[in-house]
Image (cartoon, rainbow, N blue to C red; front, side, top):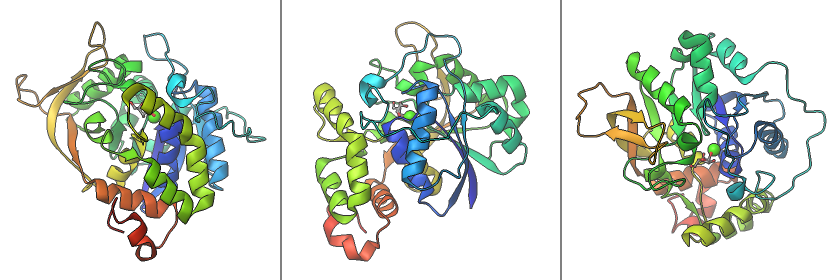
Length: 326
Ligand code: RIB
Ligand code: CA
């Protein structure tokens, strides 16, 4: 089992990613750290607890991290995720779950120093930048760093060229990418080029509800708002679920294909938050990122559906046959 910290900003798709991670035997989630992003950090903390309660996993510790970006003013994404950050499902507060004294970065430092721990980052990279400030050696002990963020040739979702996680805190993203470059390390960048291809459609959701009503209804409850948002803004039937793909890539590195390149992040001006991917080697710099451009959608949906719904593959192969090979 790979020991993993999930750093996230729940957030609807973060929640689906946590569901996938906790149903996957290959990984042990040793803790969840919250960063301001989709939701303010306190709300993100409570949303993580709401998801863990639904999954019966309140044993997993959750820590609160940065409440704002490194330099920019904080801009949430509640317009996309609903005023409660969970699709206006308005799930009840989880009693007795207070924010611990220990901060997200403290938790990261102590667990990374134990060794053999990876990080799956599903939100802005503010906590990781603070970790670099406070303990670069601990940051460099990260075994694998998989980040949902950025984009190569895909248009952005916060500007023509910028994806939310790196647009919300471009200075932290740049520090992470530059630190990796300086120490000959790489981030696995699961960007919009691949995540946009993962759309939870009404048909898939209906099948999920039919096969496992308890989980399917819950997924519907937290994604309904997201469906409306996607139709209104992009005329997409369903919703792009970005974050679970980063978890799937961590579990099965065959799901995504891409290339290595030197990548930097623009921190100001019209293209603020853009990941500048040097795919042609203009800068003659060693690569610090694996940039993904192709996704095996069938492999993703097979993993997501069978694990999140807890179902035997063979029994439902027909039902989901048009979306994936179960
Ligand atoms: O741009 C999509 C990313 O930003 C996802 O991680 C979503 O949850 C938001 O954090
Ligand atoms: Ca996220």
